[in-house]
Image (tube, rainbow, N blue to C red; front, top):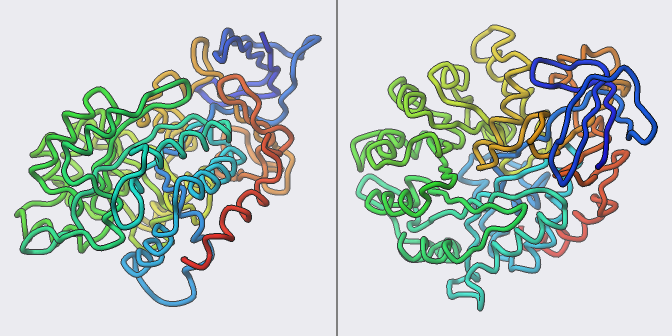
Length: 441
C-alpha cells in the first residue's frame, strides 16, 4: 500500500488541509484527515485534485499545431490541412505521434482520454492485415504514456451532406469508411477491452452517417459510450434542414441516438428546441472551447445546456493547446463574452466537468473523485508558481496550467513526477513524431 499525504486535497466540496490518501491495487483504499505526514508517507504539496478526463481528442491533429494560421480561412479550409496530414499516417507513425500526445496530456493532469477515432484503414482504402491496426496503435500509445483510453471508434460512411443528399467519399475519406454500419459494427466488435482500455463508438456526424444507418450504430454500442459531433458548423445545420427537414439534434433524437450514454461534442449552433432535447434526454455535452475558438466555430450555449439537464465535460479536440485547465477557463470566458456577466460557471462546476463529467462520458464511472473505492488518479498542482502564487485554493482551476502540475498518478502509478513524464522529454518525442509528417501537412 502507498500513502500520499496531501497538503490540500479536493474531496468534493473544495480543498481541505491535511489529507492522507491510501492507495492499494490502483484504487483509493482510504481517505482521512491528518494535520501532518507520518513516516513513509509520500508528500504532495499544493492542491491535489482528481484526475482529469479529456473527453474529446483527435491525437493526430496535434501535428497541425502552429502550422495552419498563416492565412484567412474557416473550419472547412483547415480541414484540407487535416486531410493532407491524415493521408500520411500509418499504424507506426500514428503510434509514435499519439504516444507523445498522450504523454503531453498527462503532463497537464489528464489521466483518461477519449479518442474519437476514424483513421481506420490504409490510405486509398483496402484493409490492414489487422483491420483494427490503427486503433491498436492508439491503445498501445496510451498504455505507454500511462493514461487510460476510451477508443471511440467512429462510423464514417459519406463524404458530406447537401440539400439533395449525401455525397460520395472523396479519396482521403475512403480510409475512414467500412462501407456500411453493419461492417463498421462487426469490425469494432473484434476490438477487445483490457485493463486501461474501453471501447465505445461514435457517429462522426449527420454529414458522414446517413439517417438509416444511425439505428445500427446505436444498437452496436448498447451499454457503451456513444459520441457524436453535433452542429459544429452552420453549414451542417443548413444541409440537414434542407435534406431532412429537421436540425441535426432532432434527427439524432428521432433515431434514438440521444440519451444518458451519449455525448454530443461541440453542440455550438443549437436552437432552443435542440437545447431542450439534449437536456431532457440527459445527453452529455462536450465543450472544446479552445478548438471552437481556434477554428472560428463560435460559442456554444453551454450554460443553458447545463441548466436544461445536460452534464458537461471538456476536450482538447485538435490540440491547438493541450491544456484541460485552459479549456475550463475558456468555457467560463466565452460565457462571459457572450452574456456580459462573470461567474457563469463556478470553479466547482468547472472542476466537475474536468473530472466526474468527463470520466462518466467515457465510461469510467469509478473515476473522477478522491474517495474510497475510486481509481487512484491524483493530480497535484503547485500553489507557489508565477501563475498560481496568491491564488485561493478553491479557485485554482481558474488560474493554473500544465506548468503548475507537478505530480500525476494514474491507477496508482506515478506517471508524472516533478513535472517530468516517465517517458522523458516529451518535447523531443513530439518533435520526432511530427517532423516526418511535415511534408504532408
